[in-house]
Length: 304
Image (cartoon, rainbow, N blue to C red; front, side):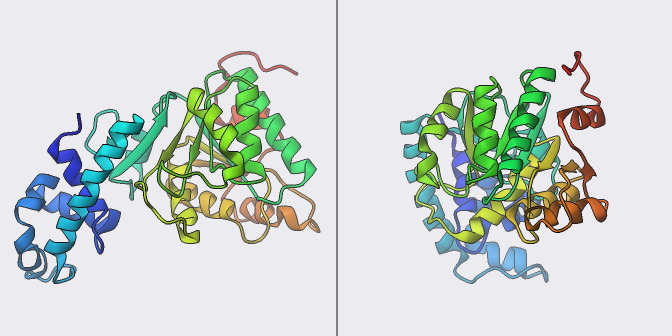
């Protein structure tokens, strides 16, 4: 049963003009989401009258529309057995809570523990080479052999992302896909079969509600979750411009361990990785052994 406070949390994040960042500011000011709704008709003068950040004049009406959308979302959540995490929950993913911009709400389907002891995000270009795919597969296989139970996180995209998810499934590791839309959709749809397997051995996570229109900018925004969920982020292959570099930048800002596979200087597919290493924003690795040694995860002998 989703109580009124949690519905109000959802409603605030669905309110046009508020979103995640301003919702956190309001929660800090008023204490609870329910209290914000109690004073919604006076928010303009209470929050802005003292010289604070300006909110739209029609904020009360927008919040009420957010509430109507949240009530629809509750029905969707209950129908599809989605787990709702709000930032005040004790079992909210603690790694996300440590970030300076955690999502106020998350929608999760699956059975993997988001607070597992070891979580690694594996990301890279959508146009992966055979070499990059091999690196991703060997990395995940090595993690599975040395650290069983480690969660592999990625973004369900073409290339390195889906390779990491599929290898995790083959290796018996739970794997979580972070989506840039609601739980009512899947992009790209060609990865639907893999995503269904992940629901049994991992999960799907998003901070977007259902009925969210798939937009390119949402994929960049979701990269902060891929970074924030993990202890370490590994960039396998990346050209000069890539969503993987966005994820690495978030991870670096969150003080996560960032790793990258190096490549030849003339290879366009690894320019981004080489730059991360050159700028000391990522540690150079060539195998899972390098990652595990650096993270001091040597819980059991590592196979040759």
